[in-house]
Length: 152
Image (cartoon, rainbow, N blue to C red; front, side, top):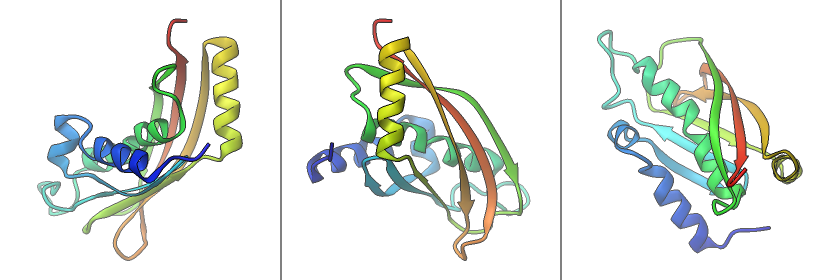
């Protein structure tokens, strides 16, 4: 299943302003297609007391793609996602805007959906790298989500 440009634009807009906290952080969706997104968190206004990016902003950027991937991959009339677990390892101070990319394959989307249809829920996970403007990895997160079938 592919998404139209209009559908992708709608998802991109919704994902860039999901709720007030994320909106205040200034996160944006830079690229989007079914099962893939690239997001950016600006350095300003997310600077901490020592002049680097606030750890909570990095954690937020690692978590937000879960919703974007859900919106671009699953039918929101039949399913909803939850975050089951997240772990983040900070590798170096972030001193620039930070980007993250997440991709899940069509096969994985189909597996998750089939399991949720059969069992009412399905777990899925990924690791993602948060990178600074020079491409250096500043943090790595492990994200565990669950797709739940509505009405189960």
